[in-house]
Each structure stands twice: as C-alpha cells, then as structure tokens.
Length: 305
Image 1 (cartoon, helix red, strand yellow):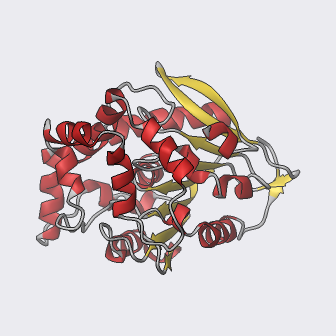
Image 2 (cartoon, rainbow, N blue to C red):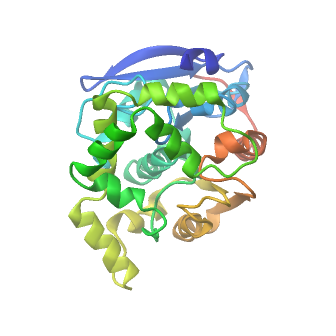
C-alpha cells in the first residue's frame, strides 16, 4: 500500500549491518537536480506520511523515504539508540547516493535528522525539522513520552487499546479541520498491530530517555550545562528550516523555537496556523510549498546520482 501512495517512488529492501530496511526511491524527472533528499517519518506513522511531499521533491532530485528500523516494513531488530540508528541510516544513504544530502524529518524522524547533521558533519546540506521532540519539553503536555519510556505499563495499555490505540494517538494531536484519511489511519493501525512493532516503537522512547540523558536535560533546564547533543549543533547543516504545526497540543511552538536558537541565524522557522502535531498530513499544501521552496532556493545542478 505504501508503495502505491509514494509513486513515482519504487519500494525495495536494503540490508545494512544485518538489518533489513524498506526504502522508497524516486528518480528525478529532470536532468538538472538538487541534492538527494532523505525523508524520515515519525510515530505512529510510516513512510506513507510523505505521500504529498515526495512526489513534489522527486520532480528534480532523488527522493528517498525510509521506514525507520522496526517500524513500517523495516525489520525490527535493536538496538534503537540514536547513535546506532543514525549510523545505520548513514550507511544506507552512502549505498544509495554520493555527496551531500538534504534531510526532512518529522517527530522521531526529526530527532534522527538533527543527529545525522551533528554526528556526521559534512553529510547534511539542509535540514528540515518538523514538530519533533527536542528540548524544553513540557512533560505535562507531552505526557506520552515518560509514559512510553516506563517499563511494562505502555505495552499493557497498547494491548488493551488494540488497533484503536494508534488511531487515538493520531486524533489526540490532530487539530486541522482537514479530516484524518481513514484509509491511511487503517494503514497505520496495521503497521503497528504486531507486538514486535509496538516493542520497537517503545524502544525509541526508552533509548532516548535513558537516565543519563534525562539528567543532562534536567541540568540544562535548571540553568546548568547544556546536553552534549545541543552543544554540537554548530557543526550541523549549512542551513535549516523548522516547520511547526502551531496548534500542536503536546509539542508547542516553543520547542521549535529552541531548535532555532541552537542552530542560530542560518535557521528559519515557519509555523502553520491551525495544524497540530501531524502538520504534514493536516496541511499538506502549505508544507509541500514551504519545504519545496526552501530546498530549491539555491537552484539546481546537473544530476549525478
């Protein structure tokens, strides 16, 4: 189903470090092209969330949408810590394209995107981060993060919720007047239905909220030293764009503003009024135009990939 939604991309399996990833690759329909672009989805979605954006970007560049490890149609095999996940994705990209790339990430995909830009200097030319958990998170609003990080309890709750748990997660943070596409919702429910997919989703939260990282974030919020991850952002992308659904009830605009402050003057921000957490699907026309204009700003070059 995802392969059909992402046309003209062609789906294929790629094995990296013994892990099978589902990759959707579209070739540019022009001899002049921008750098390849990597699209990384969030939770509880799959690469199907890029069904509006990928066809537009593929007009003039190689476009790659990857199902994150353990999610969608990619193999569920840990570990899921940010450094391992990032290293595997960099190896995957290096097997697909040469040179610099642009990265667009939503939610957990945005977290991984910013990690790619900071941990692998020189790889990411431009970064687009969309409604992603970062710093200065209000855990009373984003209560799902500590909940999903807890042992045993989230598995129990998700099992009790059954297939409807995923749809509840989507609707809880959906704010647009545009209705949630029920066919897509059914796809996401199918994608997260098995215990191994649920375990993989929760593993991302548990790896990212390990005690050492929590203590670093707490020190930062108390006015102490910033977490190491934030200190390295100056080595990140040449330019960045932060796109934020202004009505996100769990990750307010202030979280996106923290990204802008850390990345500095080379970063710009666009808020989308009336859109919630899933802004890419809630306001696709605005998102496609905003991201397309940003990535094409420097013009195109002869296609070499």
